[in-house]
Image (cartoon, rainbow, N blue to C red):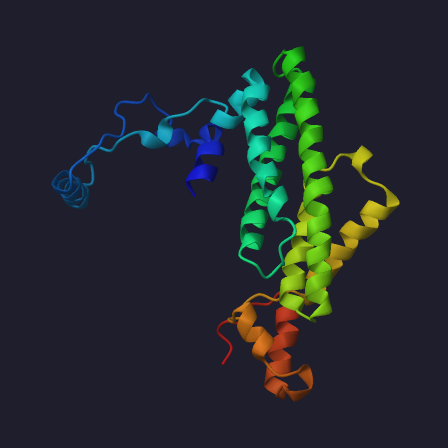
Length: 249
């Protein structure tokens, strides 16, 4: 995923054994040069490697940009994620749903970096009152996007899936409803929001199963629970308890 790789380049977590000065950078190669390069690496354990994985800042690219230029980084990003607003009327079964969930995950991860940058600044790790002020503003914008634009869409999808008794899809929607609160601060919670969060967690815990080995469409084509064999019922029970059943015969 090129976009996520560009945003979340983990420069701060480069292993110590490879944390060294950059000696070479990636370069374009012809097909013949690529084959020769691969062959050299296979034949020689000490063949020269490029240092593309080392390119970055000591704090990671995104965190560095949030410190130095929060507006230039987050304003375009917010415009990108807000582009899904025109798609939020779509059904949970439409092709737009996957794109909306992708952008939701992206927004949550960026919000995580923003919250971390704010905590670092408030702890005195770096001094820029202006940047800290802007980070607070953008964090509120991300929160408003997640809970003002995305949350109602997820709630509608939840109702749509549950109305069709499609528990696998409903579990996915509930999991994203819970993820909305990944970076919540104490002030964000109320009795109603805590109830909703715990409800989603409990639903996923009770309904989601690992190792199903079936697509959602295949699950929908199955007969009702009453017609399952005793062995199939046992497998379902194990799946509900998060026990992988992929190797069960």
